[in-house]
Each structure stands twice: as C-alpha cells, then as structure tokens.
Length: 415
Image 1 (cartoon, helix red, strand yellow):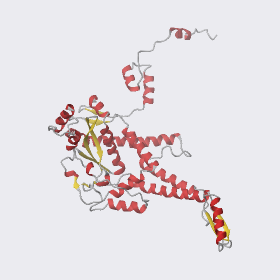
Image 2 (tube, one colour):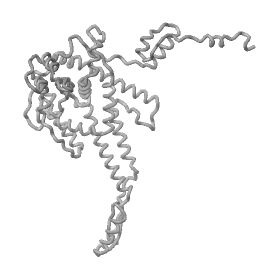
Image 3 (cartoon, rainbow, N blue to C red):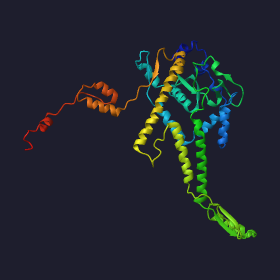
C-alpha cells in the first residue's frame, strides 16, 4: 500500500488521506463517463426513413443531435459482413508493432517495451481508427486499481452523448443540459478527442442503406422459402356446414405445420402470377450490397468473388487494402504527435522529445532472396540475419571434403 500511496503522491502532488485508494485515483480524473446516463436503445425495425431522419438531425445548423445516427451505426454493425470488413481493416493496424523514438530518431527501447504492454495504447489507437468510420471520438484517461496497483486506462465516451460540432457533452442525450468540454481544464490532458468536427459522418454513413437493403432482401428470401419451400394446402368443402368445416380443419392440422386454406367447394385458390424466381433476385441484391460494403470499407472486394476471382485480382485487391492500412497508420502517428503525446506529457507519463512511429514494412520473402544471392559474393552479418528472420546463426557451414572428392570427376570420366 505504501508504494501505491507514493505513486499517487508523485503523480497527483498531494498526500493520501482517504482509505479507499480507488476514490483517490479517480479524484484527479475527469469522471465524465461516470456521469453518463445509460439508455435503452429501441430495437424497432430500421428503414430508409429512419436513416434520413438521423442524417437530418446530425446535420442541423443549430443544436444538432448525433445520437440517432450513432445508434443507427451500432445497429448496422451487427451485420456480420460489415463487422468483418471493419475488423479486418482495423486489426491490421492495431496489430502492427510500433516504437517510441527520441528526438534524434533512435528507438527508445525502454519506453517502447513499456508501452507495448499497456492496454490503454490499444484503446487509444482503436478510438483513433474508429473516427474513420464514425467521424469522431472523445475519451478520457483515468487510473484504476488492478491487483492493488494503479493502472492507466483510456475509455471512449459514448458518441451519442457528444456533439463534436459545437463541443457539447450531454450526460443525458435526450436532455438539453450540457457542458462545453473543450473549455474544461482537463481538456488536452485527461480528456482528449480525435476525428472530424465539421465534415462528413464517417464511412458508416454510406454503409447504412446497404445493410438495410440486405435485411430487406434476406427477409423476402426467407418468406419465399416459407411459402414455396412448403407450399400451402387447400381443402374444398361445404363451408355452410360447420361440422364439415371443423372436420376439415382438424384434418389439415393433423397433416402438418404448413399453411392451409379451407374454402368452399365452389371457390378456387391460386397464387398471383409474378416473376418466376428461385430466389436469385434476392441473392443478387445481397451480393451487390456485400460488394458495396467491401468497397466502402476495404476499397475493394477481397476473397468474396469465388466465381470470377483470380490470383492476380486478389493480389491487386490486397495491395489496395494495404494502402488503406498504411494511411490508417499515418493517421495514428499524427494523432499521437498532435494529441496523445502532449496529453501523456502533461500527465507525467512520457518525457519530452519523443515520437510514436511505425517502422516501414518489408517483404521478407523478397529480402531473403536478396540475402541468399548476396551471400555468394559478400559477407552477411549473422546477427542481422538472426534479428531480421529469426534464424539462429551459429557459424559458417563447413563443406564436406568427401562431397568435394566425389564431385571432382576427371576429364575422361564420360569417355
């Protein structure tokens, strides 16, 4: 406990007098998330009208409301295809190793190792990347006790409660009570934000109609299977005779669970004539929507078109996605330089003059080919080979004299 008290004293500049250290740790934090009023989100069916109304609310000149569009984003992210595309792009960046460099450009191994293991770094980078899809992120740092040790955390404030245009934060997004979070003393240290303030609504804005169309097509296809997969049954009887109607009803119920009709023997039943289809029209709409979602998030269709796909097309598609990932990494570096590092320096976490950087990626297959070809003429550093490729080098391979002897054939061998 003494070590924790000294830590708090060093970081917060006051003596700990309270019994519960958790309360002391959060005392110096912003505490905005604790004041957010939880809300139950309606699970009613969403349609294009809901989407249009949400767009209009977010784009009002005065007092815009962002909770309808953000709730809609949460709703469409349940689509597994969209979810996989977003995760595929984000995880490529979140899993990339980084380094903390000093002002002279050299890697600070101690700080790099320290931050590589910190969960708040992952959460910060995730909040930065989410601005691409959802426009904006506002989050706060706080200390929490884990195994009686203070641990720095970063939590993203629900976007439904944030107005990035006017800089308002609502504890209850259905209420008009608000604060100007950019004018708070914690802003820029405990409280930081990323993303656009006055432009688009993010990539998910264009994905909303595609997901809604998919749900419509899936629902119609399911109904087609229900109707034509198990055709309804028709029984003709004298509907004026209640005994016969009851008997017919019992017979139809005992025959199975498919839909049935009981009509008079003078009546007829038939399906309306429409376009003959086995569901291709719905399948094509679903495929179209999936392709559009892939184009919007990944910039291309990767690994989905098994009918018309080819190795060359896949390589080109992966290259396009890699370009987007490189752009995402540049965004993370920029946000760390302009926002995160100044905040961590204000909190006493990082020293001045450091930078957050990603090393340039290398094609190890091409590099290994170059190394093996150069080894025939040049001396290659074994330590570099071990570091770059993970191959334990213990020395130069000795040639077998017996092998040399067996290959040293005389000129008259083939005579």
